[in-house]
Length: 388
Ligand SMILES: Cc1ncc(COP(=O)(O)O)c(C=O)c1O
Image 1: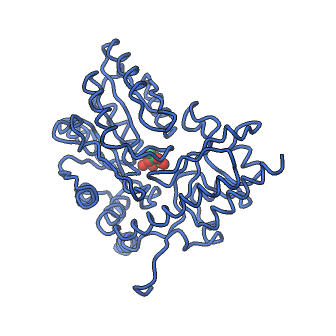
Image 2: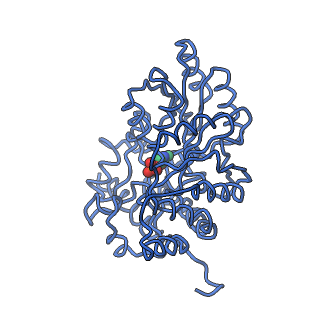
Image 3: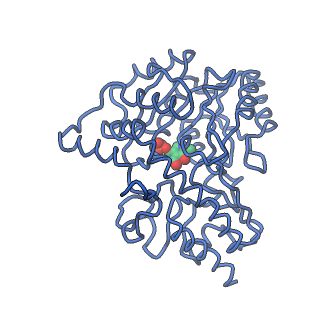
């Protein structure tokens, strides 16, 4: 590639190449269905990641992980991207974000402590928390898909009344509405949490993928939220979900909790996972900037395609992530929109109900694909309406 050529990661791989992948996104459905569902991206990997993993394979360096490489690489990235100073001492590598969240919940609270989530939100939050035997409270988002002070306060007040103490688990930025919580919104959350004695856990897995004009606010930089605990990973933004690793990040008030987590572990994240994620954070900056530029083009293209092929549906223009939330209720389809688009249109989106009852009638579209595939996917969805 010459210096004059611009790298377009989302335009590099053909459908035939993508269909050879063995991952869930490309194998769950038959070849006749275009898959725009689970959060994997249709991109080639960043070269520094390939080099780091290849090097490890050539050395046979495939044993157990060791040391703080993940935390150190994340600290470097957080400072460069968000001017956020993280002390690697306050980090701890875990297998993946969901496991990390459950481990943090179990560490910081007793079994009678309930967890508040903010639906529609990433479905496994509810599943994992419920499986832990925890009571779950819903602080439903506003109609705009943003944190809602009223529902949060209602949930927090109920917890205070029960005198159990509580936890609020947020997706920052928010999957599936694509909202980048503003500093003011997070200050509101932090103030309410302080008032009602609630501890914050912030899932920041989508943080690096900010669209132009929007910013990621790390919860640990928000006034009053110093005792929050973050669980994050390079897996979404660098397409590394198959190379398992994630990171718990705390501040000084959480040191005892992180030490206890560390002591309870022998091995956590996969060694190759840490090697690949650390390479991503160290050297993946230019690659991710190119991905963001392509995602920015795609989010506007998708808005136009929804208007053209699904007129009346409401498109939430994503502020971050590569996941777009579309309210299909105005289309008055006779059933679950995702199921109808899949069966009749041969295109797979994530059903809104995966994100809680509040998501019924919506679909989530993964637009981390080529403009060609995106255009064909929406044409297929639109064909369902034309056939009515
Ligand atoms: C908000 C959020 N958290 C967690 C995950 C899953 O992360 P992991 O595979 O590290 O458990 C996802 C995957 O899409 C996600 O969107």
